[in-house]
Image 1: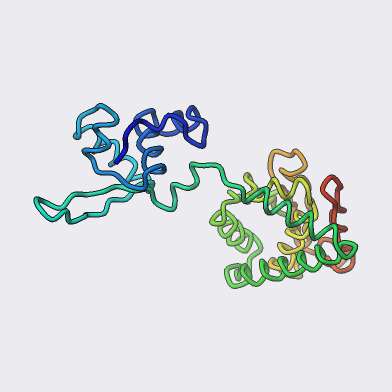
Image 2 (image 1 turned 90 degrees about the vertical axis):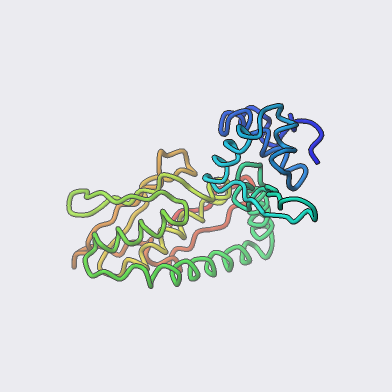
Length: 253
C-alpha cells in the first residue's frame, strides 16, 4: 500500500507534472513504484477525497495510462485496483535509442563495416517488403499518400504536397533520429527503400533530414522521363553508403 507521495519520478518531476498535472503525476509515480493501488489508498496518500481521486483516475484511464482490475477481497464488495498500462512506459525515460546506436557502432567497427552494410541491406529489404503491399495505387500522388499513411502510422508524421511536376514527401518526426545522427546512412537507405516501393516510373532525391539539422526529412519525388538520368538513390548497390564510426559520417545515397 502506498505510504507517501512519489515525489521523484524518472521524468524529473516537473516534466511529468507539466504533462499530467500534479495530482495525476503523483498517481502515476505511486503506481509505478508500488505496482497497484485502490482508490482509497491513493486518496489517503494524496490527501484528497475518493471522488476526486476517481476523477483523476478516469482521466488517466481515458488516456490509456492506467487500467482497473476488480479484486475479490473475501468479505465485502470486490474492490478495483489500478495499475499502469504498457502505454504508460512512454512517460518514463527509455534506453532504446542509446542501445540502437551502440549496436550500430559495434557493427561499423567490425569486419571493415561489412557487418553494418549487411544489416542495412537486411533492414532495407524488410522495410520494402512491409510497405509494398500497402503502396499499390497506379497514380503517383495516390501511391505517395499511401506511403505517407504507413509512415505516419509508424510515428513519422509524414505528409505529401504537390511541387511543380512532382511532389514533396516530408517526415516531420524521426523515430530513430538519435541513431541517424550518428549513422546517416540510415537516411540514405530509407530513401532507397522509398524509391523501390514507389516504382520505376519515379525518381527520388533527399533534400534534407532531421538528423542533419533540417526542419523535416524531405524527399523530392518526380515522375521519371525518358531523358532522365538514373537517380543513384534507386540503386543502393551501385553506390552504397559507407558505414560511419561513432563519430564519423557516412556517405548519402
